[in-house]
Image (cartoon, rainbow, N blue to C red):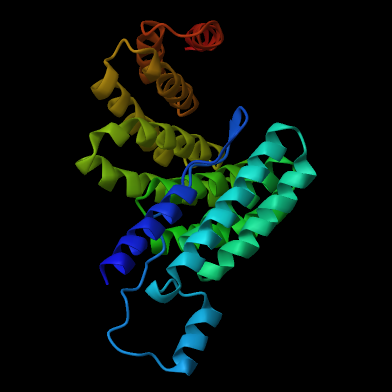
Length: 292
């Protein structure tokens, strides 16, 4: 019994490790560290042959087959490593072949398991990065659904997948759908920030994207609220003079000018100029102030 329990722990660790960060050269795969697939405790009594056969067919992680399961996890991990190596070497086709093989191998752990979600996300990332965006969308959507179930809506893997979909929608011109996805991510992160303030920079970044999407869709009031919240977060965390506050203030100043609020536009632009903007940002701020 003790030996079986120890092996269960090893299997959990192996799956967790395999569902970790998959960096490919300088362009990193999205971080996919969903929790390990659940390992069932050793059966209390003898299982029927039919039940055992069904469990094996479903790819259940049971204590009866821990050695086999650990070997499968290691094989899955090795396949992903080969994909990483191929991508780094510029062999895009071979990287895709390996990631598709990884997805097939992950199905052993169950079609709704974390390894499947991770494999789908990695393949979606490759397809998106190689310009096959339409093919990537169903994989992202399925991975998102699985991450929400296995890792939870507040987990960073879920948020990463959600933001990838939002960016795809925004790039495709569907700013309404993009705003809905950014809003979902922002709502989730607001709840997480209450317990983990260190996540506030991520929330600020998402709010900026949300504000831009709302502005593109003509929802100026909603855009103003999102950008104002982003500014408040940046100022509270880094101070009013931090360069991190420049971009949300610049966008907010441009939005205020668009809404006819010249006083607000001048105030935000002036504050941004005092926070060490880049040359490009400074040029935009100077131009805006000249028009106010």
